[in-house]
Length: 270
Image (cartoon, rainbow, N blue to C red; front, side):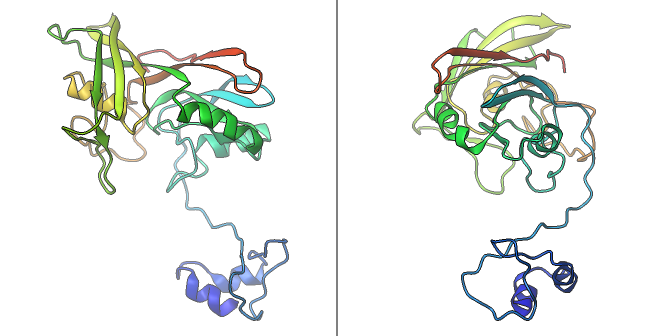
């Protein structure tokens, strides 16, 4: 097993030291010994060493907590889930530790640079019923965005197109003459210092959908690092949050049938 682990894992992993400190374990928790005979289809478990992470400013504010659901306001720049270089600095890892909820998991996606409402299941058994609502489009979502005002733009307007995110590309593409897979209702709600506060009601949930739709209307969201052009911004630069806020979630609870509405405590400008 020791030979196999050294062959299978990258050179930077100190297999000998991890075997000596019993950091490799079998599914039943017993330590893996380096001199064990290799057995195919054996599951081996270990916690990888994490690189240092830059602390993301801002707290995750709990807005609602019950047996099944946790609803929070996520600050900009904080990842929803542990992914890539953002592991400890994610909503899930922070709150699992702070609230003592080891099975906590998000029920939908929120971009790292987007602020506002994120809904999570307190235990695995509750994920299915609520995730099915998102998948079926039965969650009514409202966002607000700060963007320029175009006097010639007729609002409200519904934007419908086909969006695709290609592997390895930072930006999403609009594919012409393809079936519609992304739809957003855009309305101007108010003005702040010459900028518009737009109410966005997405009927679908494609990657970067709101950012692309406003950019293609000629009103890109303030401080968007990707649209209309990709900005070279350092990972520890938290000075200009994207002015996009997940503001409201409404749905009929799949467990008890009651109507539920959650509203963010944040407001624009962020």
